[in-house]
Every structure is written in C-alpha cells, then in structure tokens.
Image (cartoon, rainbow over all chains, first blue to last red; front, side, top):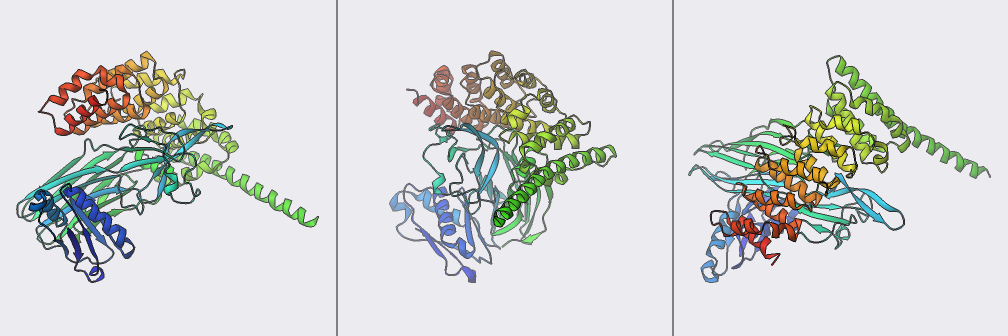
Length: 322
Length: 275
C-alpha cells in the first residue's frame, strides 16, 4: 500500500492510500493515486494528475513536502518488486524543492464541460427524416482529464532525464438529444447511451443520437527534448494534436520550452501555442504557465485550430518552484 | 378585450425586436467586410482577432437575413486582400453549419474552388471544414477539384490529408478519386505525422477501398511506431478483406523482431481477428 500525505498546513489532514498488487504497474498506481486525491480533495483545493508513472499535485495553497509511505507486505513476497519500487519512485518524482529531481509536465485541456465541434452528423428522425446535427465534444472541465499531455522527470545531479511520457485523452462526441438534461446543462451519465462507435476497438455504430463516437488521438510526431546539466535544464515539448473523429483540417499545436535554474530553484516557460484550448506547464507543484482561452465558442475554437486566429506566444515570468 | 390587445401588442413588439436583432447580425457582418476591405486597401488590414466577435454572433442571424447577406460574403471571398477573404471563408463555413447551409451554398463551386487553393493556408483549412459540412457526393463538380488538389506540390504540407478524406466521403467507389488518393499516399514527401493525419481521414471516412488498404499496409512499415500501429489499426477498421489482402506483410511484421513489441502486437491482433 502507498500512502500519500502533505506537510503543508492546509493539507496536513490529507491522507490517501492505494493498495497495489502483482498486476499493478507504476502507471496504474500513479493513476489511482491521482484519481483518489482529486475525487476526495478537489473541493478542498487539492488536485492531482498522473502522467504515466508521474503524479503532479496542485493545491490552492502551499502543499509542503509530499510524502509517500509504503506499508504492508514487501513486493518481494508478492512477486512484483519492480511495481513496488517504481511506484515509490513515481510518487516521489514530483518532489518539493530543494531536491534534485523535478517532473516537468505539459497538458492542453478543454476548460469547460463540452464544446461544439466543427463537424456534423446526420440524425435520422422518425417522420422528419435527416437532421444535420452539430456534434458536441466532451471537454475536460472538472474531469481531471486532458486532450494532450507530455511529461518528463529531470535529475540534475545525474544531468539526465527519464520517464518521457506522451499521451492523448479520450475523445467523445455526442449527437442529437445531447446534452440530455437541456441545452445549457452539462453532459451527464444519461448522455452516455449504449449505441456508439468505438474507434479504439472498432466496434459499435455511430448513430448521431446522444453518445455518438469515441476515439483516441495519436501522439505521432511529438517531441520531448530535455537538456540537463547539474544546475540548469531546458525542456522542449512540441507537437500537434488532432481530433481523431473528424477530418484533419485543424489541430492543437504547441511548442513549450521550460527553462529551470536548479540552483536558484526558479523556472520560466517560453511558449507558442494555438489559442484553444487551455495550455499548462507545471514543474513539480508549481504552475509555471497557464493559458485559459477567452471563449469556448465554436467559431473561436475553429479560428484557433485553423490558424485564422494567431498563436499565443511569449515568455512567462520567472517563478520560484515549489 | 383590452388585455388581448396588450398581449398581441407585446408579441408583435417581441417579433419586431427579434427580426431587427437577426438583421443586425447580418448588417454587422456586411459592415465588417466593408470595413476590412477599406482597411486592407489603405494598408492597415484587420485581424482575425478583430473580426472574431462579429463572426461569433453571425450564426444567430435568421435564415432570411443570411440569404440576404450571402452575395456580400461571396463577393468578399474573391477580394484581393487576404484579411477580407479570411473573414469571408469563416462566414461561409458558419453558413454551412446551418440547416439550410447546403441549399444556400452547394452551387457555389467557383468560390469554393478558389478558396481551396488560396495562397493563405488557414483559408484552405476553413474551406475544407465547410466542404465537409456540405456533404459532397460523387456527382459534385468539386470532386475533380479535390482530386487535382492532391496532385499539387504543396498538398502534403497543407491540407492534402483532409482533402483525401473529403474525397473518400464524397466518392468512395470512384476509380479516379481512389487513384488520386493512392498516388497521394505514395508520395515521398509524406512524413510520419502526415501519414498519421491521412490515417485519421481514412478512419473518419470509413473507406472500404482495397486499393487504399494496400497503401495503408505499406504505412505499417513506417519508422515511427505510433504511425505503424495506427496504420495496422486502420487496416483492421477497414475490414476483413483489407486484412486478408495484406496478410503476408502483416505476418512479416508480426514475426520481425527488429520491430517494436507494440507494432508486432498490433499486427498479431489484426491477423487473429480474421482467423
């Protein structure tokens, strides 16, 4: 069992434990910890995201030192020594300074419950016939999910980087009748009907009614280029994320260079990205850069993803990493 | 009696306001285009950021007022200034999002042909989205335009993958269209990321073509693992015959220890799905 706790006064009472076994992987343990923390403590201002085996915590006030204590039978007896050791390492890979390792994580996410996409489906209605429906796409607002993400761990004393990770979120679109509870409401479990096309398994049928299709974008062509010395690091994360459920006429694009001075314990981000969706760079527990789009309107989104609207570029202020 | 008159009066007033507001959105669009024309002519072109608020409101305009504004938008699509054409292309895409969009725009072949090869790449992307909404079929005069786009020198680096998807949707069984896509897929300037985009198009369009399937199988040998796996998954999605047609190459991949485990597993999974 791994138990996570924080030394920061506001979160001193927080304690989340995850049990793992022979079939656990570092990724699954990290995902369980992140989900548990977010589920139980989000309303108190504490969240967590797993990036592969790395967990990045965020709080609305100082988190303090993150402790991961492993208890119970040793991994040697349950036959999974690697999972145990790596789970411990994973939980410690987003440590508070001044330590020698940092997790650098980039993510882009849709900051609202759902948005209208650029494409349509055709709903065949009884009597009325074909009705073109603008597809709704599930967002990441309040879900602790992402559209695209990249992460890497830096080890300054060893001048090395490890655990490079890239992933995309699940893409879900919805047709006629969604949102089920009304146009101005969020998507709910009632929108998730059983008839839909799952591109990941090539099963089901897209029926343009409530949940229509599910897919997962590729990470092809993405780059993570870390340069680490004992005192400094620069990490370039760049790529392009496309909607797997519509023709590729637009994409989320980003090129983020995170610079860290391990001696001064500071960092900043030189950024260039599409003006939709939200883009974020975190180092350890510090959000070095956060962009929130001014609108989630279909026209604004299409403008951003096609290049009609300019990329957002600049350099963030230098911040102390916590 | 008196209260009935009051109710009728209020209803009439609300209808008048609604109509006025709906026409306000189109006259706002017309004013924006005229303003952008004037500014571009004077050397200070407007930006997308300046146009965006008006474009966000444009979808609220009524059917009648959009139809009335259409000649101005179409005229602006031929403007010599890119800033004006960009706004016009966005407005046209917004019209294709409307239920009556197809009826209003399906005959505007000349305008869409010009916008599709516009020197400005965002205009091409927006036009691609608009054409997708118009749900072209094999008889559309735009089909040959799409085919010739794929032969352009800049097709791969611009919107060729999306255009191939439009063709697969419009004319899935057309020999000339399929041939244009096959030639495009074979181009040497395709990078792994370009191939990946093309695979998205094939999956979205649900292409049943066996000729295209053969090219997808060739993508399974891409040096990028993600693209290779994506190609094998796409082949699987294209159906049993696509797998059977390419059984030999998939078997080779499954047994090739120089390939990554992910690629070999995908190939094995695809083969086992048909046996």
